[in-house]
Amino acid sequence: MHISDGVLPISVAVGGYVASAVLVAWSARRTRSEELPKLAVMTAAFFIASLVHVPFGPTSVHLLIPGLTGALLGSSAFLSIGLGLLLQSLLFQFGGITALGANALMMGLPALACGWFFQRYKGRTQLRQVIIGGLAGALGTALAAIILAALLVTGGEDFFGIAKIVLLAHLPVIIIEGVVSAFTIGFLARVKPALLQPAFTRSL
Amino acid sequence: MAVLVAGAVWLRRIAHNRSVPEEDRDWSVPPLADTAGGSLFHLWDVRCKIITILIYSFIIASLKHLTPALAAIGISLLILMTAKVSFSKVILRLLAITGFISMFLVVMPFSAPVHNGDTVLIFKGMEWLGFNLRGLRLAATIAAKAIAIALLMEPLLSTAPLPVTLHGLSRLGVPEMIGQMVLLSNRYLHVFRHEARRMSSGMRVRGFRKRTNLITLRAVGNFIGMLFVRSFERTERVFDAMRARGYRGRFPEPAERRLRTRDLILAAGWLAIGVALIIYDRIA
Image (cartoon, rainbow over all chains, first blue to last red; front, side, top):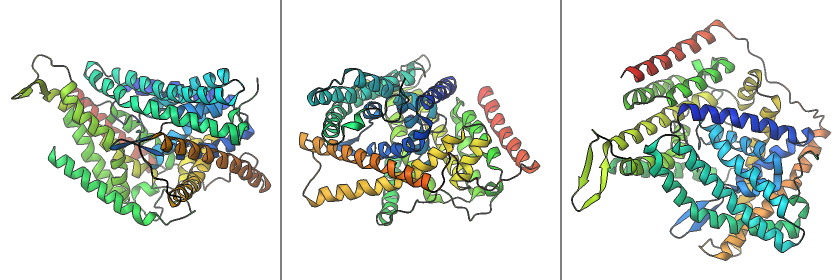
């Protein structure tokens, strides 16, 4: 779910732009410059993956995949997510133009956290990678929901009710996202383990 | 409320009808722009256009009252008419935000805390559920601002080809690499969407149906994994092909346009409207 125009207080919207511009610059510096075109192409793949809908009872939910993006791209993830959201704004206008910075923070910060978490704890065995991958997927969505609720709450007490509903609505997504991420990581561990190393980041 | 629901159903039908013929379109990148038009917007300098609409959008987003926000919708509609953009694309953009906006319209009247002087409608037998008119007004203001800004996106983006808009961005100080990456992502977005569609029709042919169970989640997980593997391998080939054609970190630049006085006059005039709106908002 992306924040649309006109919801956030103007100071938060501008602050979000500034903070995410700093993070995009940092993320771009951490990415090897000759890999940027590849990152752009990979961003398109993440974008398509985030359009996948999973049925949930009578309705369906679509995946957010900040966790998977972080796990696969490491610190390049913020740049990739910022790019994806800009593209989404250009093409479809989910997530308005003034809320772009805030939306990037909402998806990008969880991705960075999950990337760190996954690389730190993934270990060597496939089972462990699957479990940690699933946790990263669930964690990514949970963090995104929490940041979204926190951003909404900056609007004042009128927004408390809606922030609570947003948190509740994300609960099933967190579970679905965790399970799907676990399967995706398991698949990649079997088919192309090289993808589980952040491919585009500069080695320190 | 009934009108809203009927409107939403109608919009959905339009979107559905529109998406059907698109089904069999293939590899070509759908153009973001109607470059054929010759309106004021098509001739406006792209840098001026981006800056003006961006600042104006922030002004709209900072409005606090319903009437100025509704006035902003009116102004956006006038702008749409002068810009001569495709009406159906505007509808699609509005459709994209209906979910989020209608959540506010539905939830806020019930969730907004009651202050002194608020009008609260209480239904017989459902005393615990007060319908706060102030909450509805707040939600309507948010919706009006979101719509007013969303209406401006087509005049901003589709009155020049995407490379020109992105070039304008880079002339405004955004690193050139960002523009290049947007172009590349945009190109491969459509390739991968095609690929994803091919994979999912393959799954359907083999009898896979999406349901609420673990098997579905496993299949979706593998589907996404496969998409990543194929995409990653494609990135290598794409990059090799780009280098083989002499890519050195730059794309050829689109034609340059000079900044003219009338570009600036148009920008100043528009921003004046924004300032007038915000003054009206603060004194109202």
